[in-house]
Image (cartoon, rainbow, N blue to C red; front, side, top):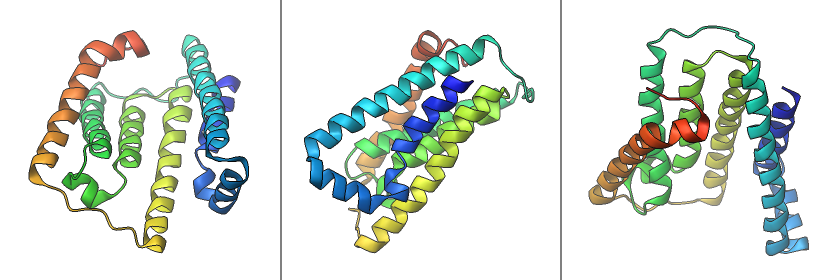
Length: 191
């Protein structure tokens, strides 16, 4: 469990810099240069991510069960995961109505993904992993909306075609991931 917690502290801590130390982040980027900042940020991110993966796999070998979710929660989790994929697609497809309305769909995707997994899993390592990501994404969304308000950020209006494409891409991506990728990559069949 220690490896998982260390990975979460490194990964989520680094990704929280904009939440707690925006001015320091900007000053450091200027001082060291954008390329050096990105290289260091990437190296630390990858290290944290690998520790999360390693720690999670070690914890799965000897799980500590906190609660046993009813089987119906798998259906709720599947629906939430599909919605998370739609939000994720909204972060990348230009001029869609979801991004125009919500402004930070990737952060909302992380919130929805984490909630989906908290609903369907009751082990300590799942609660730490997905609870950590849920708490982080809530704080990041709040900080991002405050930053947008302070900067007067305006998001372009979405089009119906881009929004429809976003929804189709998200649902399709969720289906592909659930049917063919979740089991080999994560080791769990969602259905």
